[in-house]
Length: 225
Image (cartoon, rainbow, N blue to C red; front, side, top):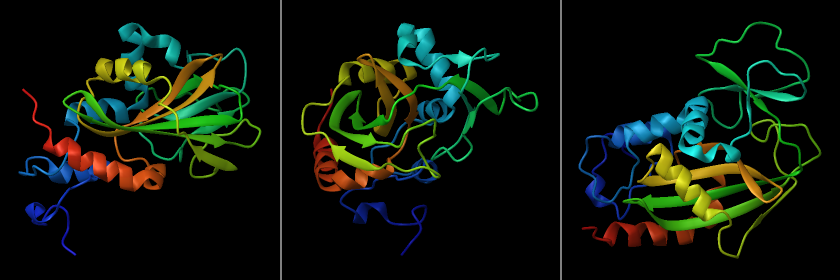
C-alpha cells in the first residue's frame, strides 16, 4: 500500500485524513475527494490553551472550564498544550512540584461527574454536513478519560445533536470551517463545558463510519457559490 504522501489520490472515492500528519501530507496536493481543515485552524485547536483563550475572547467563556493560575481548591487538571488521548494530562490534588512552563503546560479546573460526551462533526464551507454524538458513562472520578482510563459504557444518541448551535459558534470563533472534528465535553447544569476540540477524526467515530462516509461523499458533491 502506498504512503498517503505518494498515493494517487484520484484513484479513491474519498480521502479521509485520520491524523494531524495526514493533513500535512495532503497539503498542497490536488485532492478534490478530501475535506481538510486549514493549517491555521488545525494548529489553533491542537493547542488546547490557545483554543480555550480564543473561545473566551469570543465571549463564549462560559463553555470553557476555568483556566487556573494559582489553585485555591483541588483537584485541578495539569494539561499539556499539545497532546492526544490525555496522555500527558494529570489530576493534581496539590500544587505542582515545580513551576510550570507556560509554553508547554497549563492548569484547568476539574469538572466533576461520571458522564462525558463527544460530538463528531464534518464541516464544508462552514456548514455542518454530518453530526453524531456519543455519551460515555465513566467511573467515579477524579480521572482523565483517555489512554489510561476508558469508559464503562457508551451509547450513540439517536436524537438531534444537543448543543449544536453552541458548537457552531465555537467553530466560527476559531475559524474551523472545513474538515472533521470532535468536541469532548461534560454538561453541567445544562451548559456544555468543552474540554477540547480535536481537529481530526475521533476514534469513536468508527462506530458511525458508514453514515459518516455517506455524508462525506455527499459533502464533496455540494457546490458552494
